[in-house]
Image: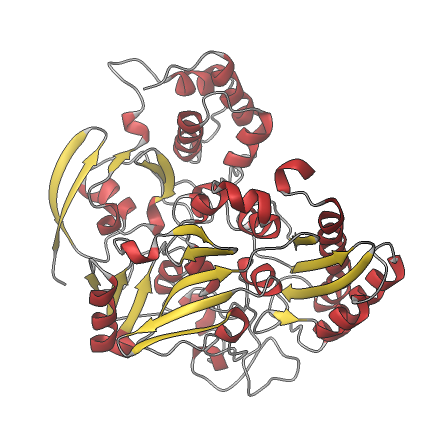
Length: 159
Length: 342
């Protein structure tokens, strides 16, 4: 299969790559760039574990071709912390015990981050609606929603 | 899960896209958000030689009012329809339908209106992995000669059209613009659907859906969409209903009801229109009768193609139809959009 050129920025770092058309964004991140924070759960867009931010908006990386992300800025869970400081959302997840097995966590964090970038003072119902596309098989939904709400209250700093 | 191999095309304008479709024909699939197509490709249900991405086509990205008409390009993302203020104010039924699709992180920033309308029909025996399907004979939709969703088998495919945008758009008498290298045609949205399970769209191989035109709802007109699903996100409809009701004073002068997720194509309930037209707006009996008419029309089509028992789905048609009609009627009488109602 013919490889096509791909210019993409991941966590602030620009890459010039050549990728096969059938490479998904998730495969590119995990296998080519060794960013294994985004997980493959179902591979069909149902579970949300592979969610990353594309230009600030959450997308399913398992259902996005790497080539569809050409020219965009991708943020993965590895890009949330800055200068050794955890993102307030990440700290809030720790403080509220919102992580059990951890498989869904990176997807939950990225969707929550996307929401707070768009609506910095998102309320109870907006948070629940935003997280509704994510599955947590430890069923720790309450703690996760609480952690996101606390990050709103804790005057989350915009980046 | 890996995707099969294909060639990727990124045309810069519509003419280039139409040329590609004309050249590659049957081997081509159009890639918009990919939330339906890429899953089917992963499951081995579609294996196009070429994927034509319509991401960069400016002609398909418009959303604007033109006179009383709402024009939406086929590649407009669902999120962009929800944030377009006139939709919330004047087309609340469309707003409700779009809100119900998928989950925020799928529908908002990836899925498109054209993709929702052109998604393939679904069936619990067809939309499965290769491994699952290998345990049985090949069904009609996969190129075989049997149907597992119809008791006793059938020589026709009994899959279901799961578009949530289609029922309410058909109720609102929307039309679609379809283009090919040879020219363009405009047809009612209802005619985009063939009611053939194996090949649910009437689009030719070299044609592409470019635009959806929705007539404006005049004064005294209300629209609504109602969906029954087991989960509030990433779930397909068990039954859905789109409704439009127009009133003049205290009388219903026009009513349209379209049921989704029960048949091979969105099911227009013409009996409901006959029952409701001319009746007083407060006539509860008329709404009940329309709900029953919808149930008996849908009963003939509902197959064992979803996880829910067919009998349950049949009964719920009447409930969901009545809810949609009542809310459309309320809006027709109070003249409010979605923001004021909630």
